[in-house]
Image (cartoon, rainbow, N blue to C red; front, side, top):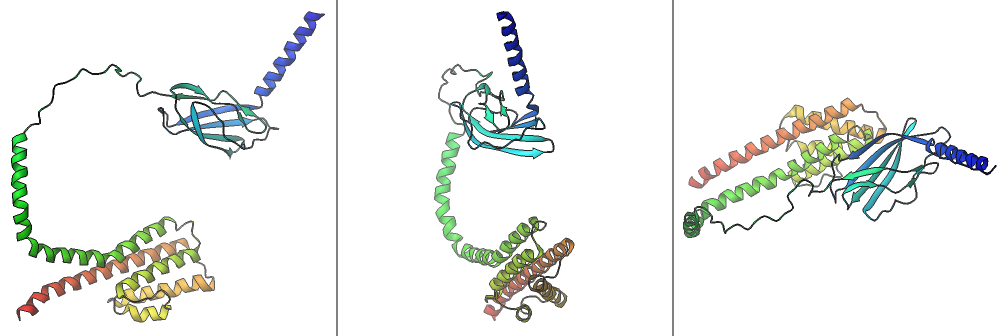
Length: 304
């Protein structure tokens, strides 16, 4: 009789254990990066397929282990499966077993992570001492350094007058090109977000960048100017009539999108970005040519 009771108890325990294991199944486990070392940030991605009646929720707290620091734990539904992502930094080499993770309806156990050591396969014995190395060409190096110290003051004095003018020209060119570099960077960022931005938000950012550029180029605050007022100011900066009319039309189209809720296709917005780039490039080219012409005519006026 006692033997029968014992057999029944073992059978019941086996059935319960099997049922607990059948609550979920791990279909895939990936470690990023594949090879990690002590102190590296590692992400373990585990695909879990739970039973039909089991629901999965993210735990309220991160696991804890004396050999690692856990940074994040998240669950991503993927059809009839879930992807568990665990980010941690291990501080111990070897094959490590993560603590049990309670996901509401199931408890995930036996998740392993292999951490390599930088000392694996390396010679850990200290290297023998070497004699002091002698740097090659030591005398030549010292002689060249002494000559350089003597020639630098004379060279600096001789090139001061010529270098001052060149430096001023470089600084002027750098400052004059700063608005153009800034607006190009803004246009690249805007193009990168063009698909996620609504047309109204796109045109608000585009017009703000153009107004800031023209304000710096014309040394006049045009941030609150109307589209018609901008057209009168742009005559001083945009020499090509066709470019000027296309840009003014862009400002009017942007106003319709911002204030009249007119729709705008993605292709139209991309075309407007290309138009702005082309017009700004021509403005910078014309400005540079005018500056070069003025710099070549200035010595003639001085000589006259």
